[in-house]
Image 1: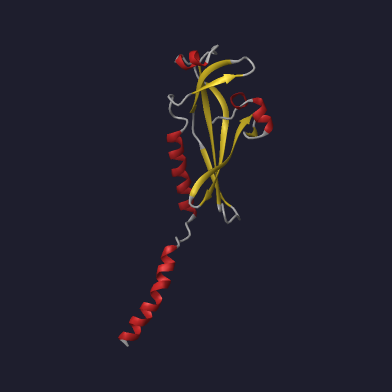
Image 2: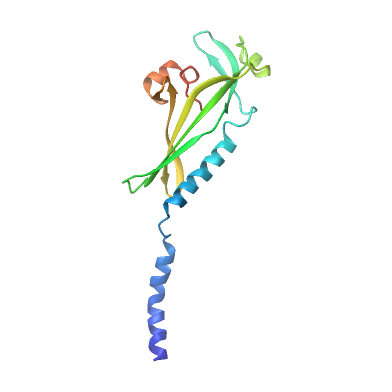
Length: 170
């Protein structure tokens, strides 16, 4: 009898290994928790540091200025289940930002040297859309809000209007 039990255990061993190789489905709370952790990490890397500025050319004036953006208030998130096998969950992050900028300069070098920023001005509210793929949150699109309407940052009209004047923030 002991030999039969040992043989059965030996035969079932590969099935146990296969079951352990595949993670168990996560609960809704786990998915929401992973998105919250992702958002916290996202904000640690973006929209928090004044040293992360850009020097941009302003068209059609052909001038240069230094600017940066900071999250200026609370954010909101939403996580939804989808019917996609590749992206079973999507997460939406919305938050307000403020823009800090210097005066316009005739040269890029002058703009880089300028550290006198004007007081912040509100910039359009941002919406970042993510999908959970292979247990990683991947950004899929971004939008900005003007007059309670959302516009896609990658639309042709937005690109033609200019990245910083239209409200999209890198």
